[in-house]
Image (tube, helix red, strand yellow):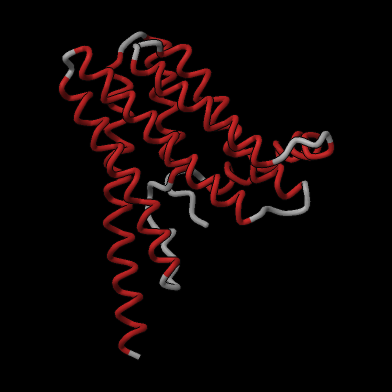
Amino acid sequence: MSHGVVPDRLARTTRTAIAPLARRLAAAGVTANAVTAAGGTLTVIGGALIAVDRPQAALVAVLVGTACDTLDGAVARAGGGGTRLGAFLDSVIDRVADAAIFGGTAALGASLGFGLLFWTGLIALIASSLVPYVRAKAESLGVSATVGPGPREARIVILIIGLFAWAAFGENELYLAAVAVLAVLAIVTFIQRVVHVAARLDAKEGT
């Protein structure tokens, strides 16, 4: 599966690095669903912290929350494989987490009277929800739709970079720039996936 602008080697290295921790958690009886829930909760808290202009605390919450989002799959594999319930929960909680982050971003823009941040957060929220929707709908029709430069992994990396810059330098314009970049990538990915799926379905129906 493509990771967009995130190098595949980095994704593989991350999975290899967390495998020992995942095995220890699975051996201790920690379930993948529990890790998923913990990660989602922390990321939602991170979104709330963004909304109240607390970038340092938001960075910590989002970092740990997204680490859990990476770890849950490894815990599932270490525990003998994932379940359909686990896949369902993971997808739903990812959508909730994204909504919290970008909703918090829009709320911050509104509270500061920073219209550009408000609208960028809102666009990122909409575009980030459309990307996985297209993939899910395509797969329900028997077509793969993992193309595009902005899958969730790439968007999260860009978001964390923006949060780090905001926390380190105290300039929310740096965070705005990161959110704008990921919003553009999400829009491009959405369009690319729609075109890809339409072409595949048209080819199938034409045979």
